[in-house]
Image (spheres, rainbow over the protein chains, first blue to last red):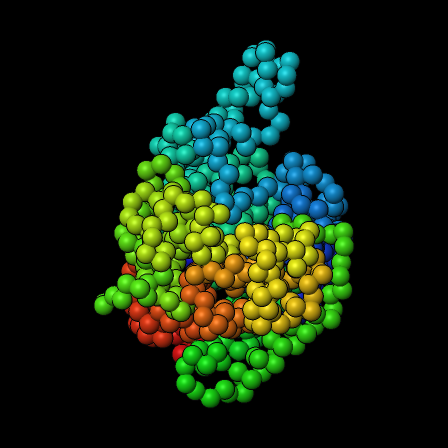
Length: 324
Length: 247
């Protein structure tokens, strides 16, 4: 990473050693026993997790670990099978997403959600909460909302300048590149002056030339007093900007800690690569000549065990089906 | 490369395709799959891997080039016609009917030829033995890895000329991923020509006969899987540091 000034990491106050479920000195989000199942698939099963305030927390894990599902639950976009979570001490279980957003917890999506046939500026203005002109009767009486409208517009323009989208202000959102849409999403989220900003894969599909500026914007959020929770696949980004890393695998939190140490945790390496990453499947499948080593034999045993466990452990179930 | 025309199952020549007007995802992709081959397709995000499979299966409009299966053009054919021509496709997600049992899912795969059910079931359970014992279980109660196996089985029910797999390892834990790759290899060994798109490039190249590396909608490299696995250009571009660490 080049081109940006190295900014200091925030040290997270802990109540105990860094381990899954460790208590933080000042958590903004506290999650307890949250589970979500899709049919026979347990997508999320988190016992206890705290997200520290005024810090950047990264949520990482291999594909299918349940990161986005947990995100959706926390924002009220999806309902859990069980569990509770509290934002700033307020219980959020069962609170719909628009109310969650009004409380100051906003999110962006992995796939950007720009309204493509509105201009960039109009997209921004949509992000402002409590607009008087949106009410049925007041909408017909412009003098009641004109002042607020110009305030919103000024704020939107200011944010667009910050995100270097001001030149695109009057263009349709459809004309933006993938990276610019990510910026627009982030900028729009800031229209509501949030306390907790949740970013779902802010780097996914972004042109490398734009990554640096996106990174700086995420770091900026922290400097402006916000808390950031983001899901990311890009390890370089995580190492670079996260103060705290939470690792999920198969729905559970398997490790948490500062980025420098958590990446070396054996549980994390196993979750990503498996304990048998060294095994050559060409040899296992007999496509390439070679001897099965102990690790390969262990792998085959584990596969067999997993297959048997699945056959025994799951009786015929009726009622719940529908996957996501 | 010398071509024995009767051997070629799938041939893509200079294919251009895309979703939005004016924007092509595939920009001149070429691919050949011969009888009995296991072909792996890898590449970075957005390279057009899934789109390539969708182009073969008629799910994205092909704007230029030619795709043939067993020597006949298949461009513009609807899914049912493609299936009867011997093309089977396993999507990455939502690939089983959750409210149907495993058996019913397999029957759906044989919609066009229900009489052959017993015979094809035997073939499929020869590869996926554990499914045979659980035919009455609902697909919705299965884990991700098991669903993937049901989906592959369903695709195999029609005795396809070519099996198209879109990321069979997606969303699975490492052990389950390896399991899925071994199963794909088993399917191919049973004589099914297979084209597999994968993000787990190392595993994919370890088992495939030939691999294609896609970049920006074109086939950037092509070669035997084991050669690509150690090709420094491919390592630098797509396998990343993980391959170096493990090597």
